[in-house]
Image (cartoon, rainbow, N blue to C red; front, side, top):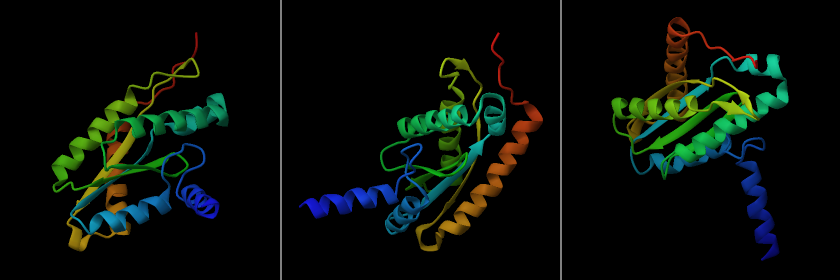
Length: 175
Protein backbone atom coordinates (compact mmCIF):
# COMPACT_ATOMS: atom_id res chain seq x y z
CA UNK A 1 0.00 0.00 0.00
CA UNK A 2 2.82 2.45 0.85
CA UNK A 3 4.48 1.83 -2.53
CA UNK A 4 1.18 2.53 -4.29
CA UNK A 5 0.80 5.79 -2.36
CA UNK A 6 4.33 6.87 -3.27
CA UNK A 7 3.77 6.03 -6.93
CA UNK A 8 0.52 8.03 -6.94
CA UNK A 9 2.21 11.05 -5.31
CA UNK A 10 5.10 10.85 -7.78
CA UNK A 11 2.68 10.69 -10.73
CA UNK A 12 0.75 13.68 -9.36
CA UNK A 13 3.97 15.68 -9.10
CA UNK A 14 4.85 14.88 -12.71
CA UNK A 15 1.43 16.18 -13.83
CA UNK A 16 1.30 19.33 -11.68
CA UNK A 17 2.89 22.74 -12.07
CA UNK A 18 4.91 23.30 -8.87
CA UNK A 19 4.29 27.06 -8.64
CA UNK A 20 0.54 27.24 -9.24
CA UNK A 21 -0.70 23.75 -8.43
CA UNK A 22 -2.52 23.60 -11.77
CA UNK A 23 -2.11 20.72 -14.16
CA UNK A 24 0.92 20.94 -16.47
CA UNK A 25 1.46 20.20 -20.17
CA UNK A 26 1.96 16.47 -19.54
CA UNK A 27 -1.42 16.37 -17.78
CA UNK A 28 -3.00 18.28 -20.66
CA UNK A 29 -1.66 15.77 -23.17
CA UNK A 30 -2.87 12.82 -21.09
CA UNK A 31 -6.32 14.27 -20.50
CA UNK A 32 -6.66 15.38 -24.12
CA UNK A 33 -6.03 11.83 -25.37
CA UNK A 34 -8.62 10.50 -22.92
CA UNK A 35 -11.28 13.15 -23.63
CA UNK A 36 -11.07 13.12 -27.41
CA UNK A 37 -12.21 9.50 -27.42
CA UNK A 38 -15.60 10.59 -26.11
CA UNK A 39 -16.35 13.60 -28.29
CA UNK A 40 -15.26 16.97 -29.59
CA UNK A 41 -12.75 19.04 -27.70
CA UNK A 42 -11.68 22.64 -27.58
CA UNK A 43 -8.48 24.07 -26.19
CA UNK A 44 -8.01 27.66 -25.08
CA UNK A 45 -4.53 29.06 -24.76
CA UNK A 46 -3.55 32.41 -23.33
CA UNK A 47 -0.91 34.52 -21.77
CA UNK A 48 -0.94 37.52 -19.52
CA UNK A 49 -1.08 40.98 -21.06
CA UNK A 50 1.75 43.14 -19.78
CA UNK A 51 3.11 40.44 -17.46
CA UNK A 52 6.74 41.55 -17.86
CA UNK A 53 5.80 44.88 -16.26
CA UNK A 54 4.81 43.09 -13.03
CA UNK A 55 8.25 41.49 -12.80
CA UNK A 56 10.08 44.66 -13.85
CA UNK A 57 8.11 46.94 -11.50
CA UNK A 58 7.65 44.77 -8.42
CA UNK A 59 10.07 41.86 -8.83
CA UNK A 60 9.76 38.22 -9.79
CA UNK A 61 8.24 37.14 -6.47
CA UNK A 62 5.38 39.51 -7.11
CA UNK A 63 5.09 38.17 -10.65
CA UNK A 64 4.86 34.67 -9.17
CA UNK A 65 2.03 35.87 -6.93
CA UNK A 66 0.20 37.18 -10.00
CA UNK A 67 0.56 33.76 -11.67
CA UNK A 68 -0.65 32.00 -8.53
CA UNK A 69 -3.72 34.26 -8.32
CA UNK A 70 -4.54 33.76 -12.00
CA UNK A 71 -4.26 30.00 -11.42
CA UNK A 72 -6.66 30.26 -8.47
CA UNK A 73 -9.17 32.10 -10.60
CA UNK A 74 -8.89 29.57 -13.44
CA UNK A 75 -9.26 26.67 -11.00
CA UNK A 76 -12.30 28.29 -9.39
CA UNK A 77 -13.97 29.36 -12.64
CA UNK A 78 -13.53 26.21 -14.71
CA UNK A 79 -16.50 23.90 -14.90
CA UNK A 80 -16.49 20.25 -13.97
CA UNK A 81 -14.55 18.34 -16.61
CA UNK A 82 -12.61 21.38 -17.83
CA UNK A 83 -8.88 21.31 -17.11
CA UNK A 84 -6.94 24.52 -16.36
CA UNK A 85 -3.23 24.18 -17.13
CA UNK A 86 -0.10 26.26 -16.69
CA UNK A 87 2.04 25.54 -19.72
CA UNK A 88 5.07 27.67 -18.75
CA UNK A 89 5.93 31.23 -17.83
CA UNK A 90 2.77 33.32 -18.06
CA UNK A 91 1.11 30.95 -20.53
CA UNK A 92 -1.98 28.99 -19.54
CA UNK A 93 -4.39 26.66 -21.30
CA UNK A 94 -7.84 25.26 -20.58
CA UNK A 95 -9.10 21.99 -22.02
CA UNK A 96 -12.80 22.31 -22.82
CA UNK A 97 -14.14 18.82 -23.56
CA UNK A 98 -17.50 18.37 -25.22
CA UNK A 99 -17.59 21.83 -26.79
CA UNK A 100 -19.05 21.32 -30.23
CA UNK A 101 -18.86 24.76 -31.83
CA UNK A 102 -16.46 27.66 -31.99
CA UNK A 103 -19.04 30.20 -30.78
CA UNK A 104 -19.64 28.32 -27.54
CA UNK A 105 -15.88 27.96 -27.02
CA UNK A 106 -15.33 31.68 -27.57
CA UNK A 107 -18.13 32.55 -25.14
CA UNK A 108 -16.50 30.34 -22.51
CA UNK A 109 -13.14 32.04 -23.07
CA UNK A 110 -14.70 35.49 -22.57
CA UNK A 111 -16.15 34.30 -19.25
CA UNK A 112 -12.66 33.22 -18.11
CA UNK A 113 -11.14 36.51 -19.27
CA UNK A 114 -13.75 38.45 -17.31
CA UNK A 115 -13.01 36.46 -14.17
CA UNK A 116 -9.28 37.12 -14.50
CA UNK A 117 -9.90 40.84 -15.07
CA UNK A 118 -11.67 40.96 -11.69
CA UNK A 119 -8.31 40.49 -9.95
CA UNK A 120 -7.71 43.95 -8.51
CA UNK A 121 -5.13 43.43 -5.77
CA UNK A 122 -2.18 41.15 -5.19
CA UNK A 123 -0.53 41.22 -1.76
CA UNK A 124 -2.38 44.46 -1.03
CA UNK A 125 -1.02 46.11 -4.19
CA UNK A 126 -3.61 47.39 -6.69
CA UNK A 127 -3.20 45.74 -10.09
CA UNK A 128 -4.89 45.45 -13.45
CA UNK A 129 -4.66 41.89 -14.71
CA UNK A 130 -5.79 40.68 -18.09
CA UNK A 131 -5.17 37.69 -20.29
CA UNK A 132 -5.32 37.32 -24.05
CA UNK A 133 -7.02 34.03 -24.86
CA UNK A 134 -7.59 32.18 -28.09
CA UNK A 135 -9.62 29.01 -28.49
CA UNK A 136 -10.08 26.38 -31.15
CA UNK A 137 -12.40 23.40 -31.33
CA UNK A 138 -12.18 20.23 -33.41
CA UNK A 139 -14.31 17.14 -33.85
CA UNK A 140 -13.00 14.11 -31.96
CA UNK A 141 -12.05 12.15 -35.07
CA UNK A 142 -9.69 14.86 -36.33
CA UNK A 143 -8.59 16.40 -33.02
CA UNK A 144 -4.85 16.78 -32.69
CA UNK A 145 -3.45 18.62 -29.67
CA UNK A 146 -0.55 20.24 -31.50
CA UNK A 147 -2.84 21.60 -34.22
CA UNK A 148 -5.40 22.77 -31.67
CA UNK A 149 -2.76 24.55 -29.59
CA UNK A 150 -1.24 26.13 -32.70
CA UNK A 151 -4.60 27.40 -33.97
CA UNK A 152 -5.64 28.61 -30.52
CA UNK A 153 -2.26 30.35 -30.18
CA UNK A 154 -2.83 32.18 -33.49
CA UNK A 155 -6.24 33.31 -32.25
CA UNK A 156 -4.74 34.36 -28.91
CA UNK A 157 -2.24 36.64 -30.65
CA UNK A 158 -5.12 38.15 -32.61
CA UNK A 159 -6.86 38.81 -29.28
CA UNK A 160 -3.65 40.24 -27.81
CA UNK A 161 -3.16 42.64 -30.73
CA UNK A 162 -6.81 43.73 -30.56
CA UNK A 163 -6.45 44.41 -26.83
CA UNK A 164 -3.30 46.46 -27.39
CA UNK A 165 -4.94 48.60 -30.03
CA UNK A 166 -8.05 49.32 -27.94
CA UNK A 167 -6.73 49.51 -24.37
CA UNK A 168 -3.22 50.09 -23.12
CA UNK A 169 -2.54 47.73 -20.21
CA UNK A 170 -1.21 49.59 -17.19
CA UNK A 171 -0.10 48.74 -13.69
CA UNK A 172 -1.52 51.26 -11.21
CA UNK A 173 1.19 52.87 -9.13
CA UNK A 174 0.77 53.03 -5.39
CA UNK A 175 0.05 56.52 -4.19
